[in-house]
View 1 (cartoon, rainbow, N blue to C red):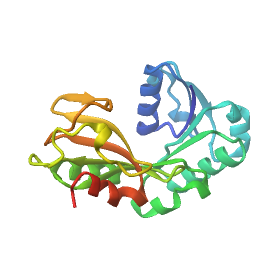
View 2 (view 1 turned 30 degrees about the vertical axis):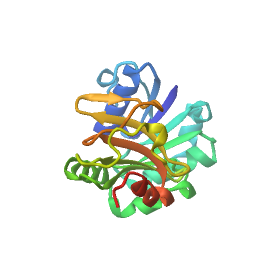
View 3 (view 1 turned 60 degrees about the horizontal axis):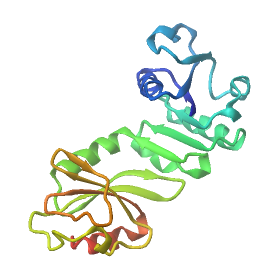
View 4 (view 1 turned 45 degrees about the vertical axis):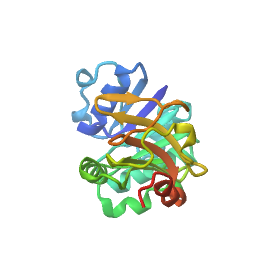
Length: 219
């Protein structure tokens, strides 16, 4: 996969290292030449230039990239990068960092954003996830498909203990993607059963989250 990252600060570099470690091809944009340090991210290509400027994106051949990550510390810049990537270069997947949660409402497909990642919101969700039992916690929103990654921890005395995944009666559009049981991560098969204390991770549209809670007997 070919990935372009706008912003080569601590966040952008960390993302680049992870992607390169997973054998992806990564290009970093950095508008301040003095901050370009190829040795800091071995294996990455670097472009000196502002990713908000169309000429720099054209020079990089952005139309050939599979994913663009707008990871600067400026929400306005991230929105401009996302919009240019989607409208001018038809990049298939655009991921944008949200620095100020008050701006999160802007990061949608109108601005070319497929996935908005808000660090404060994710941290808050993880805190909720750590202490919430019998409730649904939204971990991440996937804007393009209007779907959410949600988690719920079943109470120890859940009435659906022992029920196979195939018989959970999930609402249309909801998918169980993982069962976390102690130290185990289970990719659920239809015959696998759920147990009290399981953490269930779903992808589901927002409008069926209530039905999902009902199906899991969390109402």
